[in-house]
Amino acid sequence: MSGEKQYKALWPRGRKARENHPLARRPGTFEGLTICELWDGLFRGNQIFPILREKLSERYPGVKIIPWTDFPRDGDHGFPDWEAHPDVLTEKGCDMVIVGTGA
Amino acid sequence: MRASIKAEKIGLPSASLVTEGFIDQGQLTAEGSGMPCLPLAMISGHTDIYNDEEFQKIIETVTLDQTIKALTIQPEDAKPVHEPGPRDVVFTGTFEEVNEFFYGNKWQEGIPIVPPTMEKVEEFLKFTNRVADEVIGELLPDRREATIWNIAVNGVMAGCRPEYMPVLVAIAEVLADPRYGVEHSSNTPGAEELITINGPIIKDLEFNYTQGALRVGFQANTSIGRFVRLYLRNVAGFRPHETDKGTFGNTWRVVLAENEDVLAKIGWKPTSFYQGFKEGDNVVTIARYTSGGVIVSVFGDTADKVLPYLGDGLVRHTGWELIFTTGLPANPGFARTQRPHLILSPCIAEVIAKSGFSKKDVQKYLYEHARIPARRFEEILSWMSPERIDLCQLVEAGIAPEQFCESNDPDRMVPIVCSADDFLITVSGDPLRNNAYALTSNGIFGYTTSKKIELPSNWEGLLQEAWMR
Figure 1 (cartoon, rainbow over the protein chains, first blue to last red):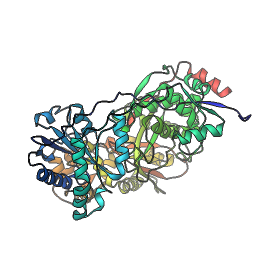
Figure 2: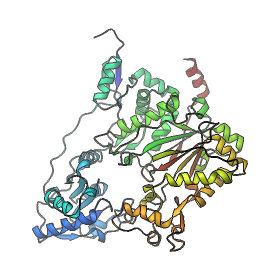
Figure 3: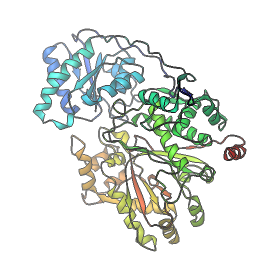
């Protein structure tokens, strides 16, 4: 150790405020299930979702897909206002969701 | 991402579509939201640079399979991560060694910090009546607790003096206010925070409010400006190449202090007054600004002569940010959040005041005259939207205010804000030069938010002691 002054430096961060939440259980299949689309209006979701819709329907004929246009888009970022429509996903019968677009 | 988390919490599997450059950020944001293994489906490259054929191929060959996997295969559970406690000494060494260690852990930004020792932190804590462990809020994306303690630690690191602590606490309170939207501090335009300060504390702490008001070189302005970026890095969790996605970014701004001597002379109110505070209150106001530019040599001896140039300057510095004025069909929440900031050097303010104008009158003038043709406004919005934007349709949809569709004439002049009150006006800078500065805001992503600075009991005595050091 040199003769220079030694500093005992403290941790500059903060405790993580939340415990982890478990992810939803994946069903392993699309058969008989309903996929819902949620789009924030950005980054070509209007093109991405129709492609995914077409290809998923081809591969999994038993799947039902509800397009993003069927959901209210009155929240801050083009998604539903969750306070105004807290149960919109379950009311529509969604079993899973595809959300776009992060960029 | 937030919609995916919402779905997962009610038991619905999600697939989040994310472009390649944002995968790391997406994973870290998910981790901060308590779902570290949230599955993402990648879009190679960036969506905006492909023709339709190229784009279809990428979605079919990359994104489709990742979407299927995300929805059907259960991700592994996250492993617990051990982190130090708030008061833990994480390293002991020389000044240089501490800085190497902090840089290696991404806890400083590439220039030396003052080592945050217990002794230094305790000096800062003397300048607040608040309890060190008090949690002010949770800052995204890491969702870490903002506490009086870690404010002091980062204040030490930034090179602040202990007596700046009341200002630092007020700044952290703004960052923790949901209206401010700290979670967007990394968005790609790379907007940067500007803190505006009002009140007697400007003189108490010797902020520069004259020539070079936005230049480094004055400890209060400079070190407190640095504190914000350090706090965003260490507590909120914004780091370049990870969660900070500014395409270019900017360096932090120094604190802007208003020249309240000139305000008193010309009878104008401080910026904080228009944010709902009393004259004489010590207040910080923070907003994120995408750009700023100087309006040089504002010639004239009356308000009528100088205001048109200032209005034109504000218009010229406002482009894509108009999405925060009227919103877009898919983003109604953007509307009514554009708040440009005009900084006037004292001699311009004096010319305007001499003509009998108050700040309120200047706001009204700018609202009525800083305008652009509706067709130009629509053209700018349409560049960023998959559909052609029509202002009248935005009004009909209840997104934009009615004044944006007073007729169908494409050449009608429309304002760049929704209300005269949306303009912030601050007097600062060289008292003897007739220049102004226009800043365009980042709207909802760092919305103009103010907090009163709480002084500790015996502020005067503590200051005296500080000056004697």
